[in-house]
Length: 191
Ligand code: SF4
Ligand code: SF4
Ligand code: SF4
Image (cartoon, rainbow, N blue to C red; front, side, top):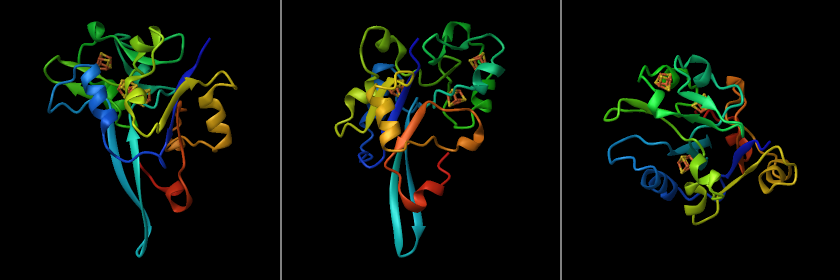
């Protein structure tokens, strides 16, 4: 069975937010609503040796996901392919998943009265497509793939570029990996 994840190359990300807009468009998330994805600017180093980094952040698709554990209605669940998803019809809007997520990856949709977050565009994946943010990125900063397949492009990149998980000390075992982070930026606390 596949185990889907994402590899993000921060050296390629130019902070254009195309992925954020694409995500909102595809999932029909209204203007003024936080949405499933954000792009974060971080500065590392000490003056005058400063570096600016840009990190696209969405659900880390954790293998040990506290959002699933705390959900009282099983609205938040794991698919067989490892994707953490949310069934809005089962959500009672208690916000426990939002509070439990150490990556601040979920938001509350006030209009619908339910939580929401990235599910790796699972409906697109089921149709043989790529996540929309991956497809819309002009610089090809993201690679989606099956992490259980050592020959997938995503697995190869994680190995060859020494991919890291953000804040692994949170203990949730993310399946989103970042590559291209160098020097003092490796010690930064991004989320
Ligand atoms: S990043 Fe947050 S919302 Fe996503 S799987 Fe991990 S704990 Fe759940
Ligand atoms: S807000 Fe919805 S998805 Fe989140 S824990 Fe409550 S019922 Fe589950
Ligand atoms: S994978 Fe889909 S849901 Fe997740 S951030 Fe990208 S476009 Fe949004």
